[in-house]
Amino acid sequence: MKSTFTSLLFLFTVTLTTAQEFKTPVDYLNYIGKETDVIARTTWKYTSAVAHSKNARKIDVTRKTLVRSIQTAAKKIEALKEGYKGDVEYKNQLLTYLSISEKQINQEYEKIIDMQEVAEQSYDFMEAFILARDLVNAKINEEVDKLNANQKIFATKYGIQIGEDNSELGKKMKISNEVFENHTQLYLIFFKVNFTESVLMKAVAENNLNAIQQNSNALEQYSNEGLDKLKTFKPYKNDLLLVNATKKVLEFSKKEAIEFAPGVIGFMMLNQKFQESKKTMDDKATKSRTKAEVDNFNLLVNELNKEVGTYNKLNTKFNTERSNAINSWNTAGTTFISKHVPID
Image (tube, rainbow, N blue to C red; front, side, top):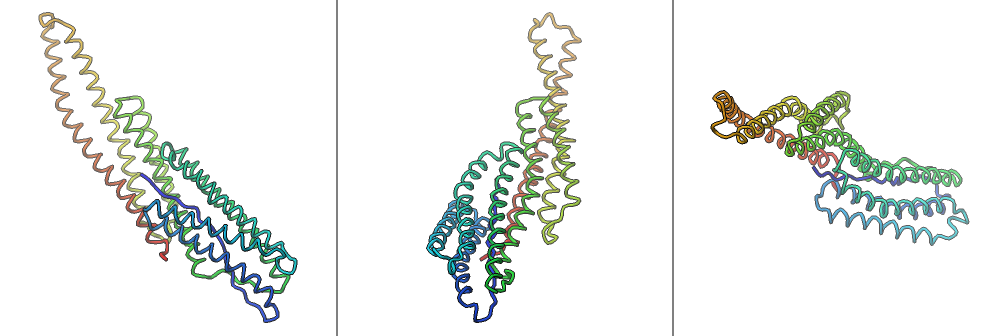
């Protein structure tokens, strides 16, 4: 199952309220605000593309556009050599933010994309990928906090009142972050059992009895752990769509560990017994075979033929249920994000 993740960038614009005598410093802040607003809007386009588009090229184009908007803004801010009447502290903090943001989005995201290529090879890789993605976001948010602090210092110094960001864009970004975070938590629960189940199926294909037993035990354990987590999980806006889809996968995985795996092991052990008996019979000349040996072998053949049908039905049943559970989760995940992440 492929999943696209995004780290949301928080660029908080502000509302300025001031008397006329503060016109010059307000103009200075408004000039900077226009540049950061371009970045905020471009960031939103990138976030929206990730949420509502399956076109990887379109998503990457919006990411590159975001990088260019940061670079353009940095040049314009850099051109304000003296800041406001020689006060350059806020300007310099903004340039630091822009520089770090550009690096994180441009260079670090490329590393994350490389990590995503191998993320689905193990649960540890997936956790590492998500951690790296979240660290990028955390680094940018850290700089945003510094930037906001410096902005308040500047505003206080010049008697400017700064209101909280109640813009539609700010609201959209906040909502998007909450939706993606909710999705990620459920995805990790889903992925852990889904990956373990894939390893189990590989062991089945290789007729590896020990690996089947080990992975079926792990699958039951992870399924129970996931079901316990869902009991206290707080769904976004009480939307149980993805929670229920996750629960369906976990319940199926537990059933697969308890019912399917033992059935597979039993059939494989019977088949192994048959192969060993057949070899013994083949190694003996026809005249050397006793009636008891022949009768026992024929009974084993009949038993195996009967169990082949049972085993095929078991496979068909669980293949269908597995496909339905995973498809339902994928559909629910896409629907959940599309439903809650605002559209432009």
